[in-house]
Amino acid sequence: MVYRFIPNPELFMRTLLLATLAALMMTGCNKTDSKKMANPTNTESAGHYATVNGLKMYYEIHGKGYPLVLIHGGGSTIETTFGKVIGEFAKTHQVIAVEMQAHGRTSDRNSELTFEQDADDVAALLKNLNIEKANFFGFSNGGTTALQVAIRHPEVVNKIIAGSALCKRDGVPVQFWDFMKQAHLDNMPPQLKEAYKKVAEDPDGLQVMHDKDAKRMLDFKDIPDAQIKGIKAPTLIMIGDKDVITTKHATEVHTLIPNSQLAIIPGGHGEYIGEVTTPQHDDLIAATISVINKFLSESITEK
Image (cartoon, rainbow, N blue to C red; front, side, top):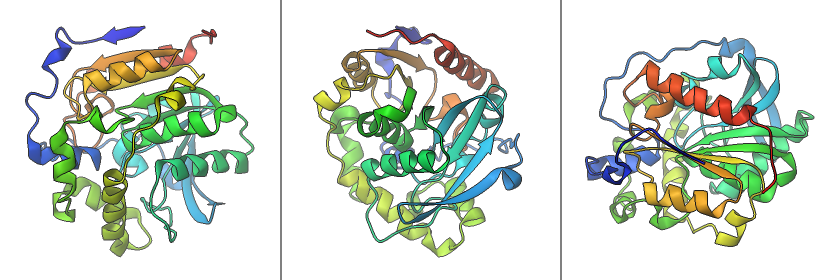
C-alpha cells in the first residue's frame, strides 16, 4: 500500500540547497525560525537510566498500552526529534523514547557509532525492561537503526515505522557525500547544539558526538538486499516529498520489504513530525500521527 499526499512526487528535492544536505542528516534543516517546541510530557519524572552494553543509557516512558519505541535522528535528542508527537502517541501507547550512544543524556564509550550497535543497544534495553515485543518508530538515523533492529533482533519486533531511513548510499544525492567529507560542527543546526548542551552531562562532548555521527555516515555501507528482503515485520516507510532521502530510494525499500507500506508526505526532512529545526505545521503533524496510528492498529497479515 502506498499513501501519496502529493500530486507529483517526481518534483522531490529540486529546491534543496547543497549546504543543507549534511545538516539534514545530522538531522534537520537550518532554514527556519521554528516555533518553540511543545513539550506535552513531564520528561523529568519520565526519565530513567539503564546500564546497556557498557552505556549509561537514558530513556523515557510515557503513557500506557502496547510498547512503542522511539529512536531519534543523528545529532538529536528525544525532544528535538519527537517533542511534537510523544504526547499524542502516549495517549494510546506505552512510549519508550531512547537516546543513543553519545547523544543527549546517554554516555559514550570507546567505540565508533554504528547502526548495528545502536540496534543491539535498543534490543538490550528492552530485555532489561522485560519487554518481549514492541513497535518501533525511528527517524532518519533512527529509522536506519529501527530497520537494523528488525534485521538483527526480529524476535522483539511487532511493527516498524522507518521515517526518512537510509539503506543504500545512492539513497541520497551524490552531493551529500561530498559535503559530508567537509562536515563541521559550525554547520550543525543551532537548535540541536543547544538541545545537547541543555541536557548532556558533559557539554564538551558535543564535538565528539558530531564527529562520530559524521564518521558513521562517511563509513556507511549499503544494507544488502537479502537483509532488507528478510524483514518480516509489517513496515511503514515514510518520507517527505522534499526529503534528503529520495523518493526513488524509499520506493525501492518499500518494494524489497514484503509486508510494507509507503507514505510520502509534504515537506522536508522531519517536517512531517515537527522535528525541531523544521517549519511547524500542526495539521501536517496530525496527519502523520493519523497515518501511523492507522498502520499500528491494523491486524497483522502474513504475506
